[in-house]
Image (cartoon, rainbow, N blue to C red):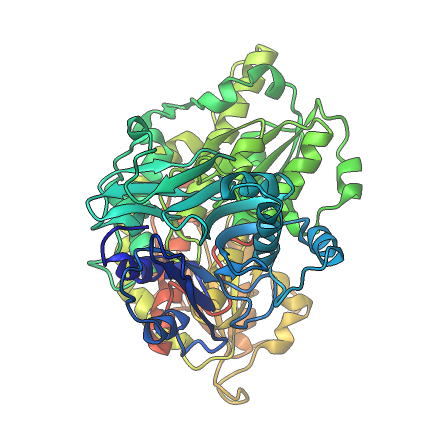
Length: 630
């Protein structure tokens, strides 16, 4: 909202700055103070080659006197991809327009109620329900602020909401719950955004709206509490990935620094002792936990699998399991046992993942202690768990997870060490030395990840082997298995290549049927990326091929099972000798104890990126992919 002619430019530039979140619709609404003549332009397109933001830019023109406005990009999660479902949405009178981030869980109940009162709906979105509900209360005589507050008290879910009303053409009403909103003040006026990066060039300071706060802001910002102003960090303010061409590769390259933040630059880890203030505060509750479940979705679920292996490695729990939040139901909770001895760790980059929020709510009802591993301070998950640790990965602007995945595993490793210390203290026993020290591996991790960034050139060669292929397998065992799963996910998300991750010996249980050679394959030999690490699983990845004793030159080598089938191998290893006879140009990574396999994620991320470049894909905004599913 502004008192200069720059309002339309700010709105459209702001949409450009958040486009990496993914969108298939965009729109804006503007009006002039003292006039109240609202003008709305909104467009949608299911075609990746047609940009809704550019459509809005082309369809809207600067209007004299229009110095107040709101704008939004939409990803179709509720309702189809149509102009009617794009934001902003209006109430029945057309006097109120709203834009909204988040998800209203009881939208259908509210829609049914409003339909019963005679209200008609043009689309299927939850945002239109909010607009009609606010309009209903405003029509009953409440001012726009009170109408907004009453309407949002009826809503269950998350929201970052901005309301514009032609009856009050010099004000906007803003409120948030579980979806951040920031207010900036500058020479050009007062600004509201869901990302601090939108303020660059307009405001040097911002105020973060408190959870469930409802505020009225004016053009001149006279009612803002300037004592709450915060200066944005360089990372928050950054609107371009320069000097890198994409946010994705920038965030891959930032991982050594991100790991340093997760380790508190040494503050969270001293020798073999982990210090986690959030967990320390709940010591008396957490010390009794004997079994623990790690829960996530997508990349966070893959991090959970790695975390279970770390916790078994540390010996801190009798039972450790990884669970996909998408598939958890009441029966799973009933099987977990007594809340006193059962704990949960929920993992979410955004802290707004709907399936994770549901798990936390169910766990809280049953009094299970819940630890959060979250990247976003003030998010719904962060605010509802018993305690937790922030990953401090920094904002991820590319939709695919890279540095946040790595930092989730770093935090799970710290939590594993913390519980190991607690068990030793409570039992009065001295901790036995670990064969492969997790603490030492964590201390080395920023350096090893720095070394891994040098693999980009060989990863580019590997990506060329994948170009033009229809299928790919990624294999790993032990700590390598969840990295294989995550690597396959990256190849799908970024490289648009059908890839499947499996445990090292799993191909013989069916997927062998998909392997083709140069001779019989429509697109040549099937590529297989293998994580052959110099650990106690090395022999499983290289040997034990009893079912193929008659294959010439097999020598009972598992990798030669797939080699004999004509597959094209890409080997990632920390010991080049393990690739002898399999790959003349393996990708060699540093050895780092129980975190060696974690290092393998970097070449997999880089291969996916280089494949995207070969295919002219945008790795920041893969088709049909949203950063956070609420």
